Image (cartoon, rainbow, N blue to C red; front, side, top):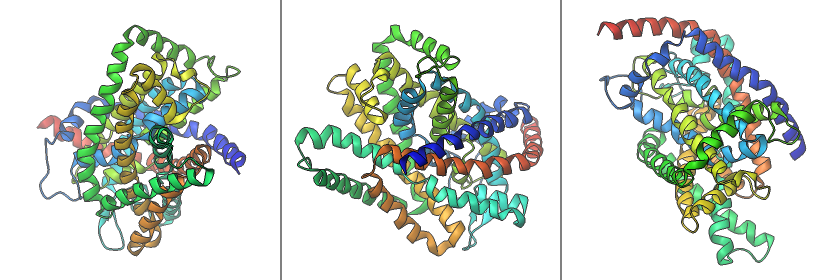
Length: 453
């Protein structure tokens, strides 16, 4: 099973590479780079300026972005980057940067569409996301494409990596040194299951309140975890300041040679960078559109501009910091560890004694915020498929997977998620391309009004 999942995942992402990069390039060129010229306006919107009274939606621009970032800023930034560097070499980070820039254009379109074509669920509540803008924008005959997205989203947005990696770091730093749950394999699994159950309980206490409670918690949690992780990473980089420029040189040279990968496989470098970038910032996957579709605004273009800041924060800032920490400490060359344990060893190398605990606190925030953010996506997809009454059963299914993923091997988790998550991009990108002219028309009108004011 593991080999089959790995083979299919490799084949799928080898082809999705063209869809994600090509789609992002299309959106960037088709927009004539207009959204990039108004990034400052997007930041002003994010900071609470130009607020709309009595606008439709459930949460503010800031909380919508925090809800989206609570899902994207997580293990993809810590474990995902470590996987990218070990599997694809330092050059994979360059391709993550490229994907982030293209992803900004993709997010502008998908998140504008999420507000432009909101649809009503079975309770008559307005909702946004690819399944809704497919149905509302393209018509009922395209609804099967929306159903396909929702079915993939129910599995692709499960918190498997977060639970799995958080369990690993807690076991490594607390259970093993204390000798807890170590007498047999059964006891090891028991310890993992109990920790997974604790996580599921804490997540359940937040997510049962829906997007408003998720947005409220995320608005407090996300800025704090970004400051904490960024601060710790920058401190390490200051300690190794003389190695920063050589690290960038390695990234740039390896991006086009693949020398750091066995056999010099340049294709592996590119595919790995694209795959991990997509898992990190989710541009083109459609998840971000579900979060931004709940924003309180009657101006779709505003939410598209706000959404563009997601890849900047998530990939260009957070992922770059992780990659540089791995490179300047030389931890990336370790063949014994991967994922979050590799990043932990980098923090231990730079800050003996305190480093791993700083990372642990950051990982706790990152993982927890991701788990509450992903719950909104899974429940939203489930309710689209089965109706509003499915909310609690789907939520129960979601929480149960937190426990299950604490028990399985990371390879299985990564390949399963990569497949389900990757399939979400197909309906999202295709429908966004078909509806892109509508976004361009709304963009011209909005920017024209903006320049007049």
